[in-house]
Image 1 (cartoon, one colour):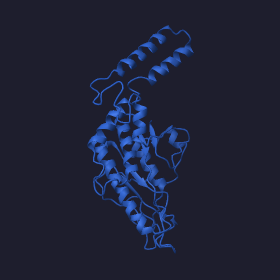
Image 2: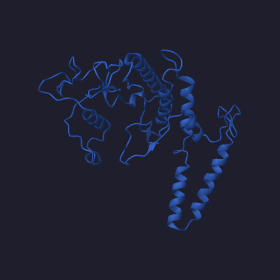
Image 3: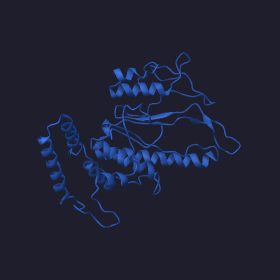
Image 4: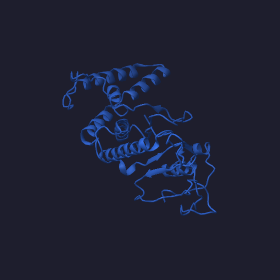
Length: 287
C-alpha cells in the first residue's frame, strides 16, 4: 500500500502499484477478517484487543511455514515459502492500520466547523490514508473530491462545495496531527483546470486553462502566494526568484510544482527521475 489512490490521474507507469482503499469499512474487513459486523461482536478477540485468541492461530501458521521452510530442499520452493513468510509477518500486515484507524475514528471530530455530514467521503478517505501512513504502510496518496464542474448555477454549487472541501482538508490536518505525522507530511491541492471568469447563459462557468494550487507543508509558516493573474484571469509571468509578477519572467505550470516536490522528496536527481524529465527551471516553493 505504498501508494493509495482514490481515483483520478494516478497512472504511475507501473513504477508503483496503486491501492484502492477509500472506505474505512472495507479496509477494516481486509485488515481484520475475524471481525463480525451487524452488532454480533468479534469472533476471536475482544473489542479492546485485551483478549486475542486469533494471535494463537497466526502464530501456529507462522510456525508451520517455518517448519516447511526448514525442510524445503528445492531453491524455488524455499523462495516461495520465504515470500509467504514475509507476507504474513507482523511487520507487513494490516493489523496496526486498524489500531490507528480506530483511534482516529474515536478521537478526531468529523464535524469540526460546519454542519454534520459535510465532506463525508473526503473524511473517510483521509481516515484511511492517515492511518496507513501512521502504520508505516503508505508513503503517498491522493484524495479525490469532485463536484466543481459547474457549467450551470455556478454560485449555488461551487461555493458550498468549496466549503465542504475545506472542511475535509481541515479534518485531514487534524487527523495528521493526532497521528503524530503532520510534521513530515506535505499536502498539495489542485485541480486539472479552472473556471471561466465570466458566466455562461445558464449562470454556470466553463473550462478555463488557468487554475491555482495550494500547498500545506511543515517547512513553511504559510501565508505565501506565488504568481498572479490579470483582471481577465489570464496568467501573468512571474520571477522564479521571488514569485512576484515580472514581465520578463515565466508563467508557472504544474511542471514547476512537480519539479519542486521531487526536490523536496529527495528524488529530483535520481536516475529514475531522469526518465521523466520536466523541462522547466527550478522554482523554490519550499525555500
